[in-house]
Image (cartoon, rainbow, N blue to C red; front, side, top):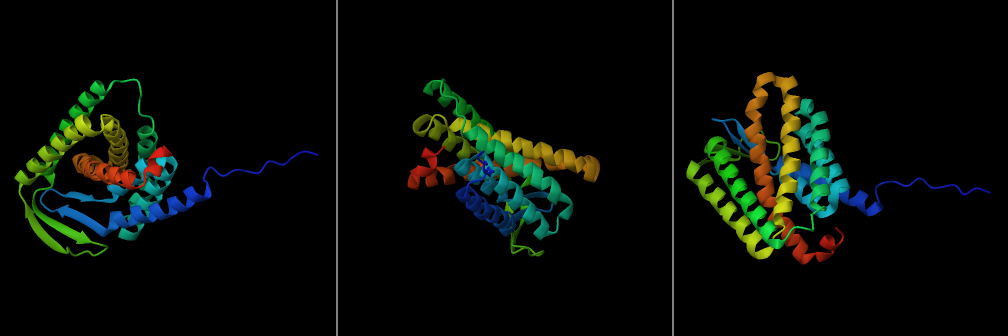
Length: 250
């Protein structure tokens, strides 16, 4: 009598539950807070941050599912139906790649090499943030909450604020890499690779949708990736500090 093999789902019940919860969190994070700069058409939300947090905490499977489904649902709710199919694929790839790479930290390199790599990446991220922020996210800024089409409030952000933020981010990343965690650079690199997949994916899709106008969205999406990077890493480190079991499962 032959034994029948039960079909196994790639998702365990716990992973399924976590994927559902974090899909909702990605959706809410994408919708709840949006910044728009009319002069430059600069735009970002904190959805990218939640995609990275999910991927770093729970790995490629949950990161990909939550990133894709949550972001797609946000597009549907906000009325960007034409972007929803692309968002599902692009954000799913982004979350999966960040989750996968972040768990493959090379072990052979010395701490000295990691400190140097992390310092270089920290300075690069700081410069990128200062450059894009001062170019696309300064001046009169409109802040939207939820699905409202009217801004909740407006404020003026001078370019100097972004220079200060960029310098502070570079300093903190170099300090963290040298004094706290030399391999922080690999986490930064993992997010950067995943983020560039997002930037490239939307660029290709928007080329078919709006033509040459897609070039204008490249720095905007890079800016969103940069904000997600600098917010997600300290959040994840804080979670690992109080819930070390999550890191031990990596």
